Image 1 (spheres, rainbow, N blue to C red):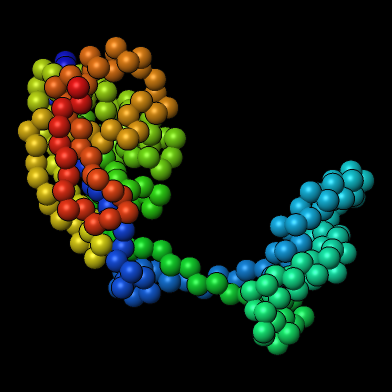
Image 2: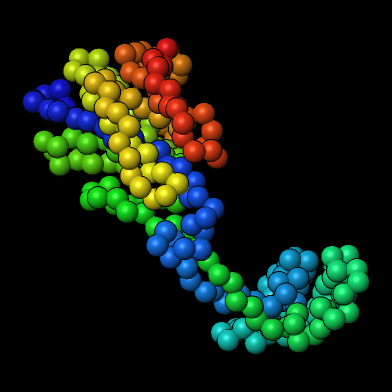
Length: 245
């Protein structure tokens, strides 16, 4: 970056939680139906996983089970115990109505579960959002056609947030790097907040998966700003921008 003309910049997007009123609105979420195992099978696997693994390991030493027939046989062996566990749970949860709610048909039947996935409407090239993140920071170097995404959702994102954050911070000491701050709000609207004429970084994952000692970190981040919100569970009312040190 220092060897020629370069005009890097960064974009920070902070995400608010989706408003509860939109949870099942298809304009805001993608809703899919997922088939899941029965309560009985789920209880067997939850309560007897270790025993089942031991039996399957012994069987697979000398046999194959490509269609999971032996596995299903093992599961059925634990049905009586699992049924007793479920009966006790129903008695506790429904003390007056457990006899009508607890039936073999109900606990043995595969279930369906609704799954919702929030929709994200970002312009390219910002149109990939990792739903594990509460923020994402983009590091751009237009002259080299570089756009890298940092965040906290994976080890790779944390490494990018650290490596490029420190690299941009060093460059920022000789040439200010502008930072644009956006919010993806509770109504799935991308809102502009501000542009700061010096480098801003989200500090939460700085140093993760890329270690600098404290002295080097302070020297690298001199002149850069940290951007923080008060609570990731609440709508964003204010964001604090202040020097790192």
